[in-house]
Length: 106
Image (cartoon, rainbow, N blue to C red; front, side):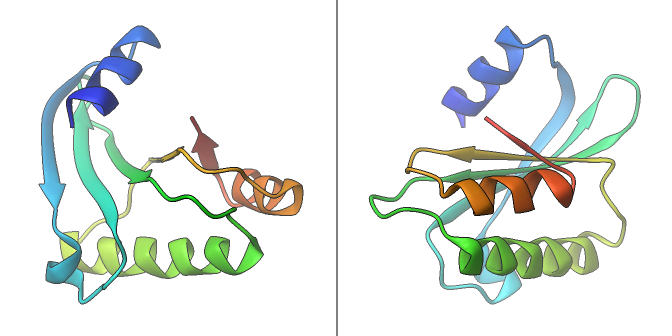
């Protein structure tokens, strides 16, 4: 969590409240870190951190959209911003798909 907070702080993003959501709470078996955060203006942020060795493809984009949908139902509200931290190589088509669906890639 500290790595995510530090990298967002460098970009000028400061949050009042940041809470980790366990994948088990959503019924997901993926190894992913999920956070819901509230910034100083009161907007909600969905922050995902993915660390894997294999390349992220288009099928992974659909998987993350499903996880995001489950997160919105679990939290009971929509998020204004969606950020994903990726440590793996990213397919160019997947990158375009993430951006077209409103994700910010870090």
